Length: 278
Image (cartoon, rainbow, N blue to C red; front, side):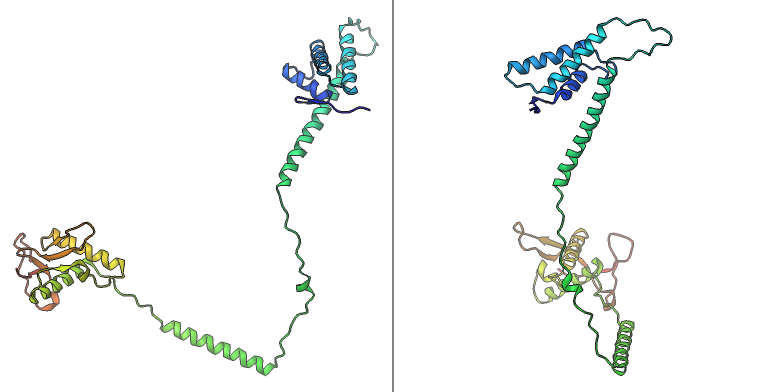
């Protein structure tokens, strides 16, 4: 009974033979039979030394290589006209090697495809008979009822169209730095009239929940400090910010409140600010 022997990387005699040919960098169509035969027989001797039972196909291929080697050693007879052409003793072995390599590559591709498909899981088919076996349901509705329902639908669509035609989205106008400067000036004047010399930053924010309102108020204070309209102090890190009028400060006011434009002493242009007082 014959069986396959796998030693190191070789499985079967042709696997070993192909390895020896490729390792020696030989062309399959021009095999150096003498060299390959010696290496092949040395490998079989190594298998026997390791107490492996050499399979019969290894011995058959060894005999084939020895036969081809002996025929390659024999001198070639001069071909006479009419004689059959010379046939290379290696030609049959080359065909068998090429066929082996073809099937080996195919088996490797199948093994790779098997590994890929083993990672793919198909979703089992669901039972949808419960949906297919139920008959269609029809509404028992008279023609008059259907017309009435359709008219109600048309009326509702008409009312929604009228509402959309008159609907207008109203958004609160965003405050600007200019308008916030005027508001801060007004609040500081009111505080001075009540005897208060400073106000906290939080008291100047109109909508404390609106981040935009907080930012525009802070930016307005920075602009007023740059223009020397007020001073700001903060005693501790992350502490409360207090603002107060700058000495001889001029703070923006609403131009519609009837105040007089007194002019800007630093430029030749008229000023849009009026004094808040010391």
